[in-house]
Image (cartoon, rainbow, N blue to C red; front, top):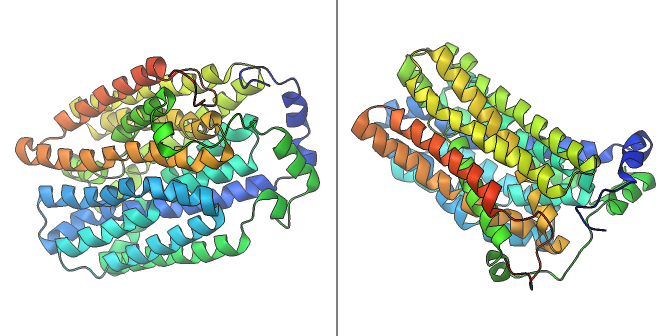
Length: 437
């Protein structure tokens, strides 16, 4: 059956979900918690940076370099990370990844120089690289097509939940025990999660708590494998893959402002106290969480109604990227209230688009053995934005002493992303080696 053909059995299966079991949603919850911890550890540096800068005498360019260092290795290790997930499965790779990033985060608390911090952040990026490909692979194994966008939105929302919680949690811990011990505590939580994931996670047929009915429901609504696994070179030659990479770069260019320079922007532009920043700084993250679930529910709803997969995925992708361009209006907002309104809407829209984005690796993969690799490829390209954006903002800040140009630039990139998903991304279907892309 074609992916773009209405599945007349879907609604029947959805109505019978209560009889199939809910183990897949427990898996999704634990997975999302892992991603949330991932992003708390990742965002801890940006929240702690104003206080670390004072102690270590860091310049704006130093700070941009430090925030960017994570993404150098994160990008570099996406391809091997995705490949390892496809070879070893999400149980081993995600557990090893979480153990590694927990230790690297804790080590940041021991650093006494910019070079040591950059080194630890480089290691952190390398060991975090398999986390998203492993999440995409987990969703593919545990969720049927008509639930996959919501599942992808949920684990992706783990990043928004973690990034949002990082602001009050890390701020509170810094006030309580200082920034050094804060990194140690944050890293220890990741180590505990890694041990729990390795002990508990299994694929559907091997999991002790899943029912036979739930396994059958998952398997009979999986995407068919339409071809043999492709090599990385073959995948990169596909127009679909190229558009996914370019579009995700644009989404991350907007989104990563919130994980890097956003705390500094609020504190320095509007002179907020630590307590007020801890409260107001959560709002864009909350908006993003809502946006992710809205995008996922809309896309899955369209699939269940028999709308083509292409339309069901492109509506949130294009609409979300158009909305993310509103981030540029924050540059001209005279008050913190107006700035937060623009930033909340932009973050809502970017995550609205991300819900469909992380369902795409399963949608377009010719074979299940390629899902994590495809996820790693698009994530590699996307996180080039994480290398470019923090340094670019730091340099522009040092020369202009303003966030106006960086915010306007982010808005323009959002518009470019909408054009990419609207016109460059072809029909959403499994890629074929013989297809003319």
